[in-house]
Every structure is written in C-alpha cells, then in structure tokens.
Length: 553
Figure (spheres, rainbow, N blue to C red):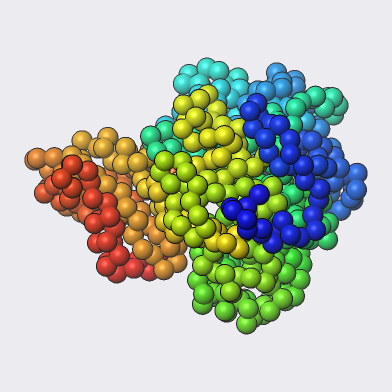
C-alpha cells in the first residue's frame, strides 16, 4: 500500500484481514474484509454488544447505546411521516448536541443522506448549499433562525425542524413533535451509497459537496480504532464541531464503532475541558494543537486528575516542540499521535505510530492500513522517495466524488487517487511530510480557508479594484486572514473603510473566514511580468509583521 517498497508500521502490525475489492465503478481498493455494512449497522452492533453502556453525554443528558438506537428509530419514524425516504437529503444546521448524533443515525436508518452545515455559515452560503444538494428537510438551531434563507427562496425544502429555546422561526416546527413511537423498517442500501455530504470550499469560490459513503466512513472509523487501540472502555470529548469531518468521523462514528463514550462540548473552553476530562475519565482526545496549549496554560491543569488520558491525537496544524515536551513532562502516559487527512479522505490518511512523535515530529506519520499514498509531479508521474511533489491519496475511504459536480470529480480524482493539493514527500520508511500547500489555503487553528472564496466576496465591495488574501502568522492559531486591497479611483484608505470591508465580509462569510486585518492602498498590488498577483511577496510582508496576540473564537 505504500510508496515504493516502504512498508508502514500499520501494514507490519497485526490488524484485521485486508483484501482487494472492486468499488465505485472502476476503482479497486484494499478493504477490511470484516466490517459493518452501514452507519446503522455500526450503531446496531454497538447496541447489541453494549446496550447499557453510556454512548453520549452532553451537560446533564446521558444516553446509552440502547437509548441512542431507540431515539434514532423514533426520529426516523417522524422523518418517514414527513416524507423522507432513501436518498433524500437531510440538512443539519446544529451545534454540538446529542440531537446532532440522533438525527445522523435516524437518517442513516432510512438510507437518507445527511448534510451537516457549519453554524458559522451566513445566509448566502446556506442558500447555495441547501439548493445545490436539494435538501428536503432542515433541522436547525433556534438561535440561527435569523440567518436562515426565506421559505420562498427554497421551495424544495419541504420541512424545517427547530431545536433550542426561542419562538419558532417562520415555516419551522418543533423537533420534539417529530419523535414518534412508531417503528419503521431499516432501509436496504448498498454500502457504497452516499451517507453524508460535506461541503468543502472550492478554488472556484463555490463550495463542493464531497460524497462520503457508508463504506468510507466505516473504514475511517476502523482506521482510527485500530491505530489507537480504542475499545468500549475508552471515552473522548468532542470539542471540535460535529459538522466537520473530524467531529463527525474521527470522534462520533469512531466511538460508535468502538461502543465507547463521547462527551459533547457545545464550545471549547480549557477549564471546562479539564473538568470534564477528570469527571468522565477521558482516555482519548483529538484536537488542534492550540487546544492542548490552552489546556496547559489553564490554572486548573495542575489540579486536574488526568491519569486516564492515554491518547492525545491532533491534526490541522503541527504540534510545537515546546508543547510536546511540556505534555510529556506533565502527562507521561499520554501518547501524542499526529493525524493527517481531509474531507475528501473521510478524515485520516496517516496517523503517527505510537511513541514516535518526538523522533518524527516533522512528519504526519505513516499511511494507514487501507491507504495508498503517492507523491506525483505536475505531469502525474510518481516521484522517488524523498522527492517533493503533490500528495495523491487512494483507498476505500476516499470519496466517490462531488455531489452534482462531475467536472470537479474528474479534476480532483484520478483512478481513485484524490489530488490533495498538498506538497510533500514520503521517505523510504513511509513517513509523510507535508511541506507546503499547492493551493492558496489558510489554516486558522485547524479551520481551512480557501483565499479565492474570501477574495470573491471582497470583489463585491464597490470600492475594491483588486485584492489578495494571504496568511498572517499567529502564535496561537498558526495563521490568521489578512487582505491586501487595491482601491478604485476616488476611494481612500481610512478606518471607516476598514470597518466597511469587515462588515461586508461578515455578512457573507463564516466568521473564521473574515479578514481580521487589511493592507489598503491606492497603488496597484504587486504583480509579475505576466500580470499575476505576487502572493508570495505579500506573504513575505506578513512574516515580518508583529504577531497578533489576541485570540478570537
């Protein structure tokens, strides 16, 4: 499965049997021979093995595996009554709460497709994604009613169910009304069917709907469980959004597969995280490195009893050496494991083998059991070990394509290999280094931002002649969003214009994508002889600016 003759730790280790299978039309993939065949079967098997074990905790709510299976069945009956059937899209505009998981598995029982949406998204983005996927049901937070597209704008959206405190939004009914006592049969479906659509920002400025299959989610969940040795005695905290691939797969479905316990945090706060970790005897975590640093900085860290915490997984950004050393000193039993993947790989492609973080911290570990990774040149030819090129990733967990977008599918997936857009190397021992990004992308504390999307919004402002969005270094989040703006004649830079630009972006973009600082000028932005904007020159300017000390959620 590995580049050249290198075999990774995962392929040498004892694991479930693997065999080649024909998938997704013309792909042949290495698959786990024994596996659950759907999200529903994953939950059903966990409930059979551990019916009374706690599955989910959120605040004062606790739900056993039997209770989660029953709650999903009850809501599925309500979905059938509302006209939801196999293949229909059910959109979730929900924060981190138990009902997110219940709704996911209710839809899976019917063979419906769940479409999680970011609670930070604004009205134009929500309208586009709901129209593009053809959602017929939207489950939303009451507090997000102000950003919902109007009923008239989405005629195909037949039902809106609301959760949380507050008056019902126009066209919405209460979620609880749809939890029925009737029992509906489990849909017959193919494990290669789409289970979830996750929208990911595209280089054209329009999000693409990555189609995650039941098969892919099952494989990613098994990858995590095998790599980390997870089982029913383990417990984790979901402190990242459940609507993103990490929260959805690396935490939710992985722990359902293991029949372990997941504690859901509506929002990350270090003191609350440490309190929960002690009270619930948390053994596993998967967070961005900044969250670990914030835990170390919190006064409660020294007072917390964290002996059960044995796996500290992280991704989205490198872990600073100083943080690794401090965690090793204060929590010697904690095994740090870097993870690398994407929405299109249904989360993990590589994981750092246990005990190797200190010696291989410059890498993201090794390709997992069913993963084939290659480094390719611009002509699509494989490069030798250690040579820099674009990382291509293949396996049963790579998405089958993008919803209603065959052009994007053809451009991004070749023979089952997804073109990651990341520049890196794979050495002779199979360790993967991610050295740069081929695409213009900003990594803000683990949130990925494609600059073209922000630039398209800036260009809509009447005073903007040209713009370029680049990363500004930040010691806490790694990178923040900075915009270089060239003004049209007759416009001048001023604090008021900065405020206008920020408000303009805030009304159209998720909050983490909004530029936090600007370089506004009347002279043209730097370009090369061919007229292309010189973003590298602008990024070099950012590197010499004073780091931003504050943190914005």
